Length: 639
Image (cartoon, rainbow, N blue to C red; front, side, top):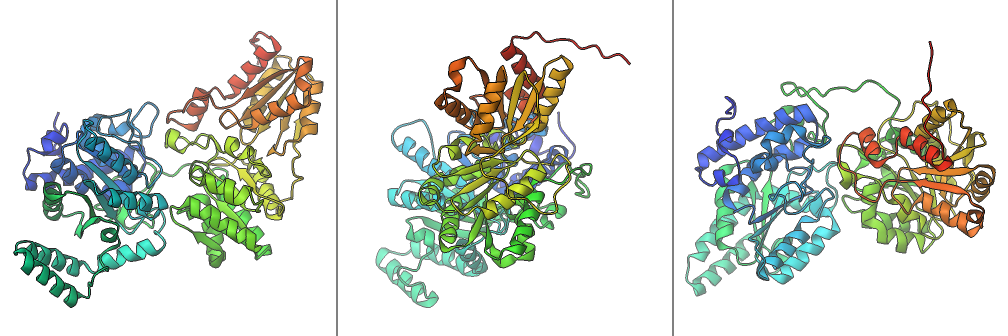
C-alpha cells in the first residue's frame, strides 16, 4: 500500500532499495522519512529530537554501506527510529516502546540490522572495534560504523575506545554526530573543542580542498605543499585535531542535513579508508520540526503530541513526582547547610537537582556522561569535608560501580547516593530498569541503604542522608508520581537501621522495602477479607537491617514474606542471611522472599511489567496463601 505523502519512502522495503536510487531521490526519501518519524512518535511518544537529527544520516549510511553485512552501531541507540523504519520495521513503528512492540533502542533480538544493542551511552566505538577484529579474523562481517553523539563521546569509555582503535590501526568508521545538544547542554572541554572546530568550518573546507590538491602532486612536491600550508594556517607539526593525534583520519566538519555533502563524503571514506576514520557531522537535534527545534531539550523525550502544533498530551494532575520531591527536599536542606553539594551525570532535570541549581548554581556539578568520574569527584568532595549528594539513576550508577566500591566504600567516605528510577520503569524496558542497586550496594561494608515507601519517607531520607557523616549512604525511589501523602514541612532524621510497623496481626508478617508498600497494603486487605490476620512492616533500611524487628516478626507469626522492587540477592537475601545467622530458621519458620525474577523484564507499562514479574497485590496475596497452606476463598460482597 502506498501513501500519498510518502511515495518515495514507500519504495523502501529495506536498505538494498536505497542503493538503487539516485542522490536526488534519496534526499526526497529523507524528507518523507522525517514526516513519518514525526507522525509515528506523535502517537507513541519517545525520543523525537535525537531521531529527527539523524534522518539524512540514516538514509546516507544505509545507501552507501552494505548493511546488514556492514555493522551499523548507534550510540546511545535512542536515535534509531529512522533506522528502524528503513530496515523493515516501518509497519511496526507505531508499536514503539509498548508492550510486545519495538524497542525504543537498538536490540539484537529484534533485527539483523541491529548488530549491537545500546541504551547506555558511549559503547559504540568499543563494539565497532570488536566487529572490525572479527572481520580481520575471518568472521562473516564487513565494515563497522559507529555513530556517536557529542554528548556520548564526552564519556571516558569513548576515549578509551578511540585510543585503542587508533593504536590498532584497523579500518573502522566513527561518525561523530555533533548537535551541540545532548539531554542537557554537553559540558566540559570536549564540547568547547567541538564547538571551536564547528566555528572554523571554512578552514576545514579549505583544508580538505588543499589536501585533495596536494594528494594529486608528486610526493616531493606534496610534502613541500603540506609544509607550506601548515606555515600559513599555523597548523604546525603536532597540532592536528585530537582525533588525528589518536590515530584517526579526521574528515569534517560537514553538514549532516545536506545529502550533497553526506553522500560524497561517506562514499569517499568507504572507498579510500585503510585505517580508522572519524567523520565529524554537524546536525540539529529536532531538525525539521519547529516545536522540537525550539524546545530547550530539543524534544529529547516527548509524550504523545499533536503533529501539527507539537502540543504534548498532558497527563491528569497527580501527586508530585518522586524526582521533584527529592529536588525540593535537597534544596531545602542545602538552604540550611552550605556544605551540601549535588553531582549529576548529564541529567540535572531528570534527577531533580536543577531545582537546587536554580537557587544555588555554584553548588551543582553536571559532570557529563561520566558516572565513574562523578562518583570519585563526589568522594573527593566528601574527603574535603563537604556533603555531596550524587544523584544518578539506578541503571546508570552501575557504570560507576568500581568507584563506589574502591573510592567511596573502602575509604568510608560519606557520599550520599540519591538513586532515582529504582525498580521497573516502563517504556524504556530492561536496559533502564533499576533492578540491581539493592544487590550491588548491600554487599558493601559500611554502606547504609534506604528505600522510600512514599514521598514523605523520601523527604525524611534526604534529611537522614544529610545528617549522616559516618560513611556512605544511599536512598532509592521509583520513577513517576508519588502516592499523594501529605509532605512534612521538614524532613526528620531517621534512626539508622530502624523500620516501622504499620499494622499488627498474628498469622503472617509482610515486610516491605520501598515503594511496593501500597501493593502490600492492598494484598493485606484482600487477605483480611478472607480471615487472615496480617502484620505490615516497612523496613526502611536494607542495610543495616532492623534485626530486632525482623526477629520479632519471625517469632510471632507463622510466616514472613519480604517484598522488594529489586533483583534476587538484595533485601530478601540480607534478611535470609540474618535469620540464618540468628538461628531463626531452625524452628520451622515459613519464609518467602518476593523479588524480581531471575530474568530481564521486557518493556510495557510499569503495572504490566510488575505483573510479568509476579509482584502484584494478587501475587503477594497468593504467596501468603500458599505459604500458610490456605485455599483461595471467594468472598461474596452483598450490597
